[in-house]
Image 1 (cartoon, rainbow, N blue to C red):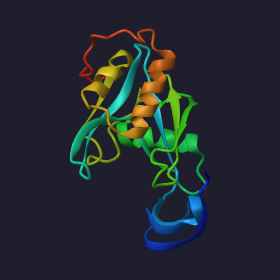
Image 2 (image 1 turned 135 degrees about the vertical axis):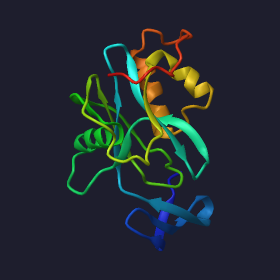
Image 3 (image 1 turned 45 degrees about the vertical axis):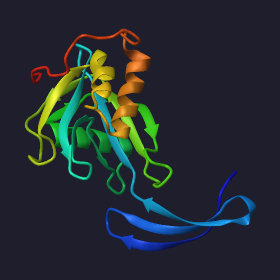
Image 4 (image 1 turned 180 degrees about the horizontal axis):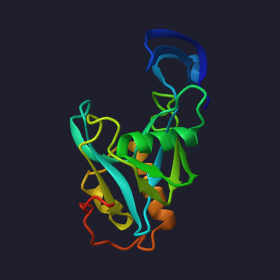
Length: 192
């Protein structure tokens, strides 16, 4: 059944979030007061190299107090195209400039509570141009074999919904090792 939205009222708004309460009608004419988080779209990229490795960020997320790998992703600036935002985020967060980007995946990470949407692209090459723009976003940057992605997921070393979606999708559609257990560790030296 499609829920009918009768109204939305703001609870809290700033430049990052718009938290609302929606009066929604469900079956039998019943109403729910449902919380909704409205946010701007995001863009990111899975960056690969010729050795079938993916560029990952090891970072801490204070909200869940977890350490895990993620792909570079961030907000799309006003007037910016998603692919340009993805390229900018990769460069800012990792110090690597991605090669040509092609669409990989569109995802809505939490549609039960948020209208957030993420545009994820694939770059099959990258050039190291320097250090990340900020020293506070990620602990380290690493290249992990694509074949190791299921093992990183199983060990809860990849837990972000968008990173999970993008990396597992790429693994399922591209990896010659898909369906076969890999033996490589993701802890490879920083690629130059």
